[in-house]
Length: 428
Image (tube, rainbow, N blue to C red; front, top):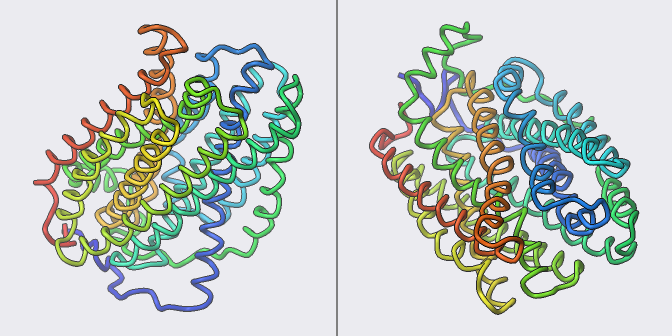
């Protein structure tokens, strides 16, 4: 049996300290910068597509498979490295890679260069997020991880919102010319520079919640196999939610632009507000509910919460891309982002509770890799292909709604099915 409440080292909540708070702020900043870097292309998407004469399918490849492919390939070795080596050093290295990727995107003159730059961005950003959540689990006890993860996810939504808002404004400043999006991308890259220097102040925390010290490959596989009935349904449910979220983040802006003939600046403002407000409200709700469920009903109650939230996501997901009023579409998009934010916070917190430390990096990397494959690589492409099959670019909103609804229903069903395998207490 694995004690996932206190771990092998026994107890206790980590003591509250100024130093821990400072490290938590730096960790949140790293996650914020990571999502800002990955999202920087999104507000420039339509301008870039027109300037480089790219198709919707090519843009979907840049926003999907290009980001996902390196992470899917590297997820297992990356997880092993995170479990066994300095995560702080990895944060610094990959923050530099994220900066380089955005600069290469701005300099790219053809599709293949853009694809390579986005591959580097996908690997860097995903590595930062996995390392950050692994460190977070060592800074806070299981009953605090929901709220701590809430703050980190709010930072991530803040990073995405900032990228949409600043990107939309910069596109307006530099205009729709062939190089306007390049100058916008250069300026968007600037805020990543001070983040790299701040990462130098981070310190590696002591690892907690270890069931087996430095397990061999056979021991690790045995542990994973014992936890399969917990890992698989939770992983599948979260992946489906990320599929809907990934499709919306890529295609909501073009949908608003085409459906309501909005300017890039206004679309950027709407997306920024929806991501920020929805993400903040959802993250707060998810963090509080996750910790409450953990204290009162353990992992089984938390998985029930996740299933219910996934089912709730279906209504706004099915309508925000097809309604006739821009104000109503914005409200529904905010609702959708809030529900997604709550699911991500509670789901990641549950993942760190039911997985022992020596497998945490590997399982988080596998989760992020699967999320990346479905949410970033396949979901945007599925929307563009479905749109083409049912009527072309003008049907992008209906295609987006269909993909989001299907993903939400599958997530709710998978999580509900897996509930019986989760314990009523925090001990597996």
